[in-house]
Image 1 (spheres, chains in turn orange, cyan):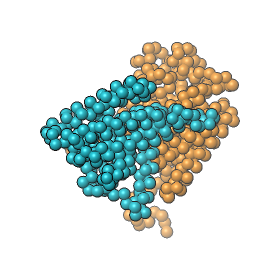
Image 2: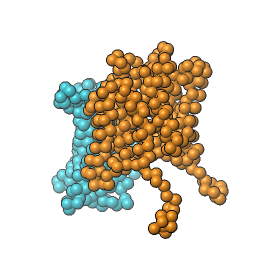
Image 3: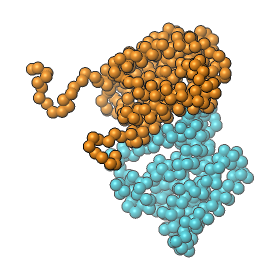
Image 4: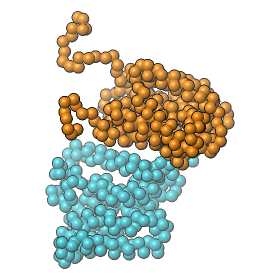
Length: 309
Length: 224
């Protein structure tokens, strides 16, 4: 029978987009950054990516088996969480740290709160902050080209000069996935082209961040300084891939703009006035917690209903 | 005497202040960075609880109903002050590590809760045992949280290295977030054990009129 003449109850509008396909697109979009990371940092980075992704998937499988729930590893969300976490780790992360992070992300941040769609903060970032607080030394030691060096962002905070071109291409110290702005932007363009994300959250995030840096950075509108802040650290990876996570970002359009501004201001605040050079992860998980509030405040009024919301 | 044993069991298991009643969360989360701190806090609270339960039970017919709260506070605060001086004099290391949380025992809701709901209505002996039971329950709760946090966060238990040298301490467990993780984890485990027990027919039941506000107590479903 022709599919067009099916008689059924609603929903009538069908789409081939599933959770699995969206997750798969995001994973594909992360591939340029991943490949670049593996190319720059070599075999250790590849191991970190593989171990973290595998242990995230295995944790989800085991938990759902043990709890006698439907096993949902087929929707790639666990794999995506693992991959995102790996991109947020330094290449020298030992295997047990990768496993611990994955288990924390899947078990504590995601499954304990009810699985995909119920987690209140981005699992990968939750795990990154867990590891960052627990193993500060290991998480902030970056080796590039055989030399332990400061990240450009740390240099920037110390008032030293940085090479913008290297930051753009990714010839710098940092976590596996955050170094190359170009590779991340390629992935982001792919996501925008596929309609998975739109510009609202990343756009307002980056714009409000730039405004904050210009106003409070102490350098005025210094293009080099602002660009270095934009390209440095996890800002690009966070803005395009983690702030836009469907589960932990607002649904309403106004809400997304408010959320983006929150992110930008918080990131600027942490970076300029905080103790450490980086602030993207904390800004994102903090804003994740504000999402229910933002959604409640920006609830659209149904057409035809006047007065109170 | 049966009643006294029942009180002990009640405080330790059925209405464990930490894992069941969720009372006294402030010291529970704040001082359990190590097993010895948890034990010290638990025992200190137990002493105050037993003494205040005893005295309040003795005075229960004298204290007018309308001013019972200030009266209870005066009693509790006197004992806390004594305990504080004793700790400072004899166990200064514990006194230093518990710090501000010793004077805060005055406003610990377990102590006022037991005074209000049990000691002010019952004879002296059961009140004393109620204090011992609740106090030990609190001690067990704090010590177990402290042990788990110390093992994971420092690789030690009661100050002795027990994890192999290759174990890298997960520092977050001796910081504030770790307290929440461990408390939630242990509460989940004891709920699980209780549910299993309930399923097997060994129903852990709580007598109606158990003296606790039903809002805090999930045992009998009376508040639902």
